[in-house]
Length: 269
Ligand code: C2E
Ligand code: CA
Ligand code: CA
Ligand code: CA
Image (tube, rainbow, N blue to C red; front, top):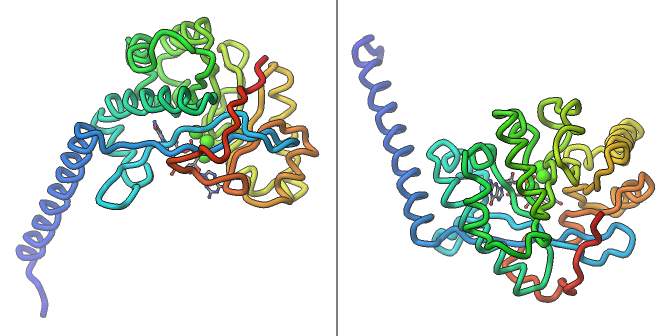
């Protein structure tokens, strides 16, 4: 049955309206979840590549919905678009602090560009984390976050670094080329993205990781490789001098890490 233009438009219009409604519902549902404390955190160990002892944990947010723990792939964009990432991020920081005390372990927390860009981010961080034990905290920021208002980002990072917070560049190598700014920011760590770890057992992939390790060394930065799944990848990373690794091979993100944490703090520069 051939449709007229008019009815075709009507169908399109109805579709658009229901999609918009679905979007609104998604936003409302996330807002309620944040409000009701249904954003929870899971912890994934960071381990010494040679001894395999736990040197810290990354804190990862989950939406506790029904009996599911829903990962950020399904809601992080909504959280960022709506600004809900701000209260959500504060909640994650409070939980990170609690986990750090409970297991006496260093914690790494992801911080969005949207959070780092707030004029009072340093104060908000202190409100959520507390005003002590800064040296147990690493914040992971992506390269793209560093491209926002450059002066503000530098001031904020300097304030945090002066307190003793470690600053890690997440997904390093995947974002904008911020190499020129590496020396101008108070950074402590480069986190090699999983996409490079996936390739590290090839000649070309090893060359990329070697280049990142060299860059880190030149700037006096620690290096972590994320997304390590196989022993061959670990062996390649160790051979290239990567000191710290993270990935399913050593543990998936979990609520309870009492069996893996030994309470040892991470060696620091
Ligand atoms: P990310 O910071 O790069 O975190 C690593 C992601 O890889 C996590 O996914 C982790 O569960 C997953 N992963 C770890 N090891 C392996 C592995 O061996 N193999 C594979 N295939 N995956 C591995 P997750 O938890 O779904 O988080 C996705 C992203 O969402 C994170 O990527 C981070 O950018 C963001 N995110 C997570 N929690 C927060 C948060 O509290 N605040 C903010 N702003 N972003 C968050
Ligand atoms: Ca991260
Ligand atoms: Ca990462
Ligand atoms: Ca990543």
